[in-house]
Image (cartoon, rainbow, N blue to C red; front, side, top):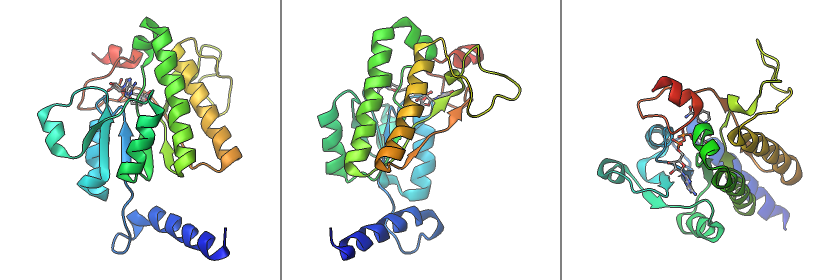
Length: 214
Ligand SMILES: NC(=O)c1ccc[n+]([C@@H]2O[C@H](COP(=O)([O-])OP(=O)(O)OC[C@H]3O[C@@H](n4cnc5c(N)ncnc54)[C@H](O)[C@@H]3O)[C@@H](O)[C@H]2O)c1
């Protein structure tokens, strides 16, 4: 690759990253949210649409949206188990950033472990490989469920024993490690935060904390 091309690509990357600080000049990122009709997706899309423009944030899921959500901004079908389908979406919509919310949460995951393995682990493989192939920034939330009974408490260190006893927790430890691996191996811009049980205006999607709040 010529130096000029490299420099040009570097400049684009920096421009996109500086968008929120310097909105006058630069093209906003195109953002795809997977599993967007769950507890967190719709509110997150609202926030990002306010920041980057309605048409730059695409909500996706495998379920039918309400009329209100459909009229609120771009909505498409995206099954994270369909790698080719995901490739087509990224290419057709020129996606830059991926916010990966699709998951089977803890209580639901325990009711159907094989499906949780597919959605949470195989799905994670698909989106991270997609992010690598198309040079996307990717955010994947983790959870306090990625700890387990053997993890020390008060305070729990960031790096510590993680031996969860749910398939959801196991899949999130896997996601954390996979993201870190892709970052060091391929330079992927992978971001991850461990959320506690989130309280929101939308109802919870089947985590244990969600059930406690019901
Ligand atoms: N809500 C919380 O309190 C909380 C806490 C910690 C971490 N998180 C994480 O945040 C993310 C979003 O959580 P949420 O509460 O919105 O989840 P949710 O259960 O409400 O929504 C998950 C969405 O994933 C979709 N989905 C399932 N299978 C799919 C498939 N094959 N392809 C595409 N989409 C599929 C579902 O239709 C659903 O809308 C998850 O990764 C979750 O682990 C959430």
